[in-house]
Length: 484
Image (cartoon, rainbow, N blue to C red; front, side, top):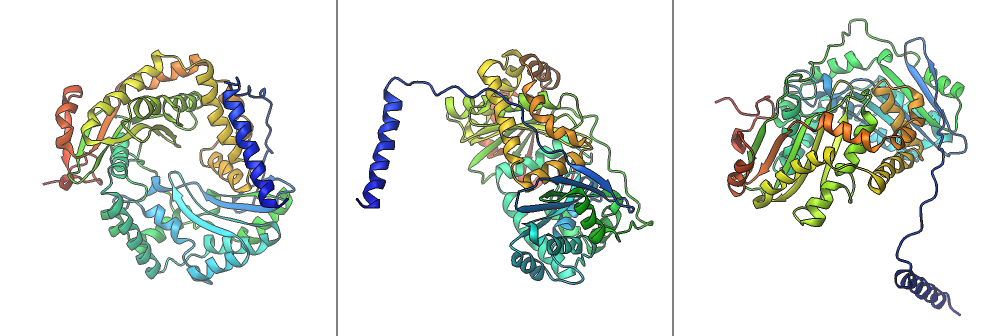
């Protein structure tokens, strides 16, 4: 019998089995297995004489090595009127050193069968590699070179600026993307997180090479950095690599770290509409400041957010997409940072249904404290969080990323093994208490779309709506409006 016929029989058998399962009286899936304790390897630490912190996750048997050099500052230290400077500095690390051009760096890593990347985010900047363990020394030499000897050539700066500006001009015409820019300003005002991490058209155009070099010299120092390695190596080997490639790194005594702007402590909710005349849809967002990463309410907040708007069966998606068909998806997010945090819930919808969606977002936010998250709903939301966390730690790259997050926010390494039990320990009462504490007061409302199609209905449900025509919008000002 040919392989093709056997394969066909296999397909028919599986299809028949599926039909029997669906129609033969089995109307519920098998129960999940019982919970069991999961323990991840606890990273070990050392410190070089120059202040560089070295963290090694010893994971024998895994063929790939992942390494990341983390700097504990990012977009929050962008100079005034230079939003995007930290992001550009991080990206430029891999675009040329004293020894290699950008193409040569890429070619060298490819010849090792590895990958390299660099960039910046809120509260951190980094460069990282993934490579086979037997190519570790050659790959770490490249990582060291891009961290210690970037040249920031003007031609590379100009190229990156043009790429960034082209991207900004596109996304700022899209309701969802523009709404995210506006939301940062509405939540954080003039605080350290109030500007766009990647910059705006005006601030990116204003960034000069001197701004980039100054930021690099100020924050890229060994006493402000951590080398994280995960793979088939020991702490002793990791420390040896650190000394070999970063031991001569010195802190510039003239570099003086600037204190970021204080967080927005006088936040008040406001309703903002940006009139985007060409928008085919409207982006609707409710938002407010949220918890810092070190908050004792952190885990309860994650579960509350998962119930509200994380995943297909979350409350927002069920109500707005599944039940009413008003959007392809509704979601929420809590972004906990070093000295502040943000919460938002959003959906994109037809312009004419923007007011209805705004009301639904508000209603579901309030309902989280009055309609308990319990039973199967609570267990499924906890499983979403713990399952995603465990999958992320399966790879060395994911493990390094999780350790980098703990370093960024000053959390102890044993937090790695506390995440899952902490999530599983969150109770219905914890979620309700979190919602009452943080979601009981009104959030801000941000709607970006074709205003004439929803504004009248929106004003009936929401008071004091501030309307900003697209041509008057200024993302560089806390009030979002151009000076006339």
